[in-house]
Length: 141
Image 1 (cartoon, rainbow, N blue to C red):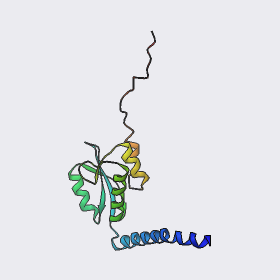
Image 2 (cartoon, rainbow, N blue to C red):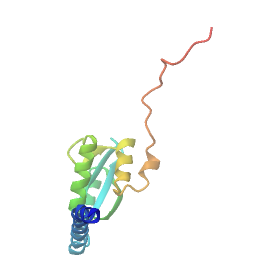
Image 3 (cartoon, rainbow, N blue to C red):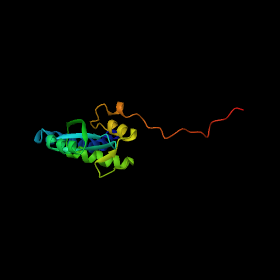
Image 4 (cartoon, helix red, strand yellow):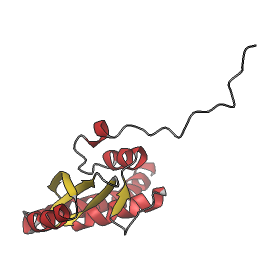
């Protein structure tokens, strides 16, 4: 009796996973050049993340605005939407619009953990210190 309940409880999550995988591979087959990407602009440390069916045209637009491609890989629009929704739920604030973020340690860490293409960006952007704490120092006289 317990096995029947367990099997029934597992059917919905398994089917959801199968549907999600099927959608992903169908999208990748239908749009073989579709990419998810990350661009960085050094002057204001802004990250631009997104999706494009033709990366070259988007890349020239970003480069004209001072961005450099960090990394890109094959991906889907659904993947981009889920990432942006997750970042919003985590509490990370976008800057210029929904696809732009400050290139700080927290954003970079979350993007890497979520499997977004980030290249070696973590090595180039160490944690920023907020300032020295002096309230715990004791002067010796």
